[in-house]
Image (cartoon, rainbow, N blue to C red):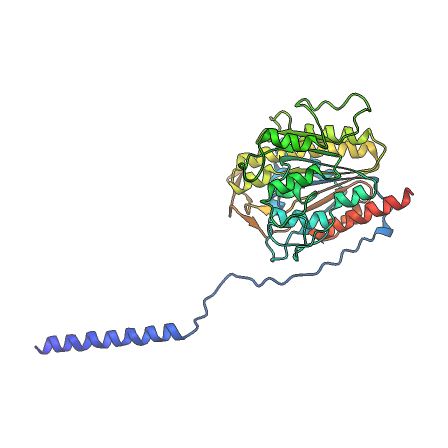
Length: 393
């Protein structure tokens, strides 16, 4: 009996201690160590000024490798060395980086980042061609058209995908594919090459209906990409392919072929031109942590860039700007002392807040030599276009 009483008292005491402990846990704020770092925006002050440039470009080619960060670039350099290939990356006169953040904070998506690059104004996730307050902002293609430039977009993705859309459309959501398509059809573009994606009847018309919409303004090229043989065609050019028809170097056509045809077209005209080239494969493969797909994407980018730089060198009046809209996948390239081979290690299937490459070659390249915010790229392109237009009057 005494033992049972004693056991009961001990049990009651333990329960009382547990209740007291629970009370303190609920009412006390316990500080737990964390790796979270407060986001504190930095304002950059680029040093290069327009009036200090030794040369100014007549033409501008902007290449965006969607999702490509510095470790993707490291991988590109290391694999080119292993193949004993001449590195296209070392041919750039200026090598720097830019901060791809959005109005939200350090993270971004393709819509917000491409809009910042295209318009010179930062915005929120998912927004195309508008600022954070929902106002339409003139993009560099519209600005260039207004200054008597020829303009074009070449992409291995869908023509209404977020990155190309930011350079031609204005809408509150990147999902408004049908609206983006209609805006493309009524835009001032002189050329657009890319793919179509069937998103369903409520979002985007089928292939035939899309072609019908584009055919109202564009001259549709065949699969061979043969340009009109005479000067009678005054309509802008479009080349449209099915989903995933333009992927890597094994595709026919591939991004290199599309870009070469576009450059030949613009080179045959007397006007200065602004051309956007986008490679999207790096982003989609990095989202899947598809290492083999990323390596194929790198080769496609390098081959296309090589043709662009050769064109720039021969032309002598063309500025080439290479950058990314954001980093995807948190890629790390690792090796060890016992095995010289490299391994690709992924830390996420999402975007990261890492800085991304900003490279430039040709007349005016030094204008992009400092650390930049992403919107600074668009503003500087507009200034170069405006300056060139003033000189030619």
